[in-house]
Image 1 (cartoon, helix red, strand yellow):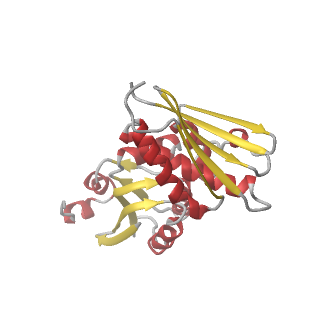
Image 2 (cartoon, chains in turn green, red):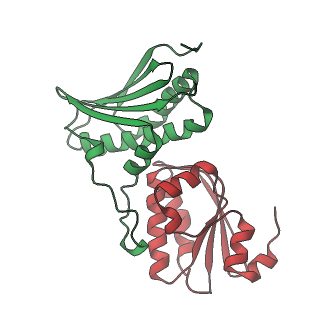
Image 3 (cartoon, helix red, strand yellow):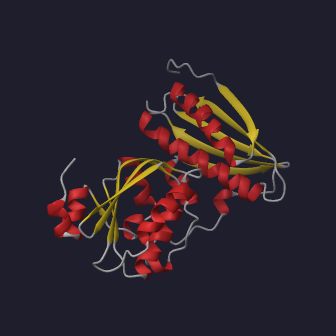
Length: 144
Length: 124
C-alpha cells in the first residue's frame, strides 16, 4: 500500500439538508486528497456530494427530516469508496429515470441532470437497501 | 457567483465568475433574467463568458436550460464561451453543447454572432 496520510476509514454524520453540503464536501475532499485522488478529480467528487445530498433530501427524506452518514474508505491501494448512508424511504438513485439528452432543446426536460452527471463522474456506483437504510457507494480509482 | 454585464454593439457580454451551485443558482437566475428579456433576433444577443466559472452543478444547468428554452422561443441567440475543462466535461455529459453553441474564446464567439461587436471588442 502506498504511503498516505489517510486513515483506513473516516465518517461524518450530518443533517440531511442542503446546508450540510459544504461541510460534507470539505470533509470528503480532505480525505480524498490525503488518500491520493488526483487534484483534477476533486471537483468531480464535489459535484457528486452536492447531487447525492440534494437527491437524498428530496427523495429519501421527502416526508420527514433525517440524517446522512458519509463514510470514506480507502478500500485498497487503488480504490477509494465514498458511501452515503441514510435511514429514509427506500430510494435507489440509480433506478431514477434518466432524461433523454439527445432530443431537441424544445423537447428537453428541465432538470434531472444530477444523476447522469454523477454516473459519468465516478468509476463505479452501487446501491443496496440494508434493513431500514439506503447505502449508496461511489468508487473512485486512485492513481497508481 | 458574480455576474458582470457590458454591452458591446448588439451583444450583452455577461461575465460569470465563481460557482453556480444549489446555493447560488437562484442568484444566477435573477442576474440572467434582465438580459434574457429582449434577447431576440439581431437586436440583442447574449454571450456568457464562462472563463471565471469554476463549478456548476445540476442546479445551475437547470437555470441555463430554462434560459436556452426561453431564447429559442423568442428567436433569440444565446451562446457561451471560454469554458474551463471541468465545465466543458459537464456540458458534454449533459449534452449542453447541443443546447448552446460553445466557443473557445469570447473573441471567437463575437466574430461568429456579431462582426460589429467583434471589431469593437478589446481583448483583456
